[in-house]
Length: 211
Image (cartoon, one colour):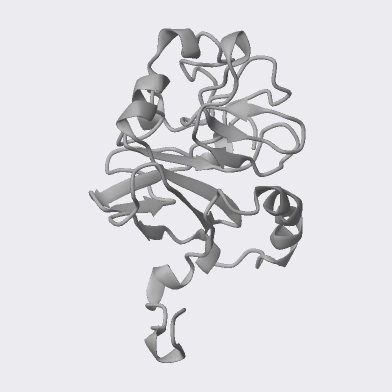
């Protein structure tokens, strides 16, 4: 356990706004229930709420995820393993997806690819199910056997929607769309900047089909 003297104050500036909510593997069900309540406590129309948010991912291990808050929304940032990336490209798995090629406008043009991100290693999605707004749980390991097998990804505890590690929804789920990808850039290999498009790109998050 840390001593009080070991705890350092958070840096000033944009990082003050970064809220490290939780690792997605902990208390997923409680998080799904609590999110509408937490949203009600978020400041409205605050200028700070619309500033870009820098997230240091340099120490995020493969296979792990962090959840941060951007504009009052939970954003899942996942360091995907080589094995997970292979599954995202597996034809047998992508055939089970509702919108595998990401034709629906649920991501920026620069994330309209098989990994739905700038860097294949890092997934960045808004963690709100497109069915009724619950928060899916991070379940990266495969589950089930045979035809019903699920390669892992995100599972909504409310009504059973399942998504892969790129946020793409599986067929038969009540969720109609993939999880949204927010505008973001990577000013350095170890930093993700939420809310700011890469240089030369223009994407308005309000243009997505459904949150």
